[in-house]
Image (cartoon, rainbow, N blue to C red; front, side, top):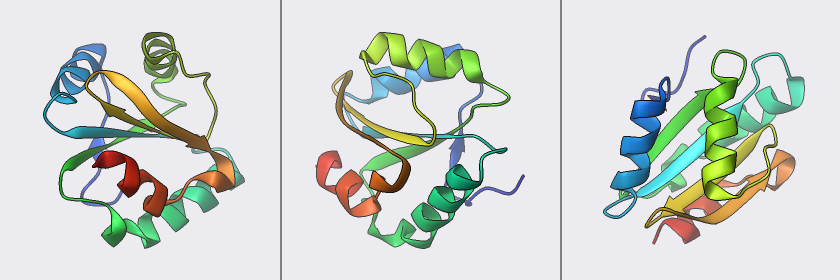
Length: 115
């Protein structure tokens, strides 16, 4: 699967915990994607098409739900955000400050919550 060159693949709980710690310094954006879902594929394409709207002060992490579903469960539990797919979650200072799913996901909204 090809991903945008700026994506950071999220593949381990250790990486997730480090990312959550980094949210004190930089916004962390988690994009949860199901590679088998056509809606998720369309939302991903739209998100990537609008990539330039994302701020430089954020790390954007890509979570493949089929390969790493347990990480999604951990993220949902730690941030108290119900799992959805596709879904984007913005984290600042260890807390979810924004989340959206399906066609509500926009880079404009994500950028506003990264500041």
